[in-house]
Image (cartoon, rainbow, N blue to C red; front, side, top):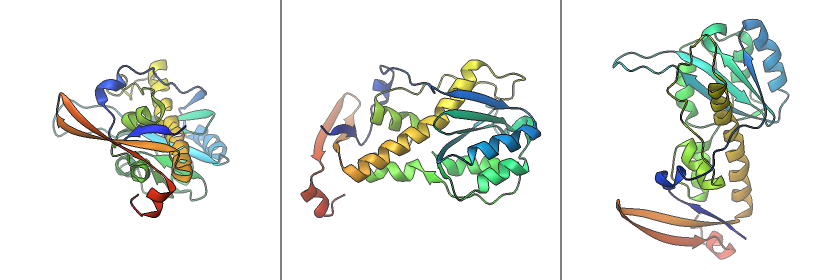
Length: 229
């Protein structure tokens, strides 16, 4: 049976979905010395999910530096507290790596923030916003893409919390880890659907807020051969 996906997922429907949480172990990195061991472990992985967090500002014209870099493999997530460690040589080695598959979403924006902490040449990263359109998904947010593929909700309740606090709350840690880990989940599922074509795309055209038109496309071999995808 083919998976049903939408070109655009209804943001109001997300609130009704069950919440997804990172199921693995979370390790917080607080000192420059700890970054070396963490990076060595991560670079032995086959795939890594990346994200960053920045303390929010509520005044125009002010912007804080990146506070947290979260990096997950399939089992464990390391939270690098960059406001304490800085961009150490080990973290730069991780960011410059070209061997391990590294996944992010809107990663260009994250890199801009990280470059304000130090100079480095970014290695190879897969941008999910470039991959999702290959199966017709037009949404750009992590929350919408994940809801579309898995019918689960990534909670954003911790996004505007203080990421420079002396001690991060467990809810903040879990939020940060979930964001990075779900990048891997999305990548795996997108790759599967791209290779198998086992999906049915429903195109939702928004006419007015109360009304939508849905057009269903089933990806058959003939459809692919006609070059319409």
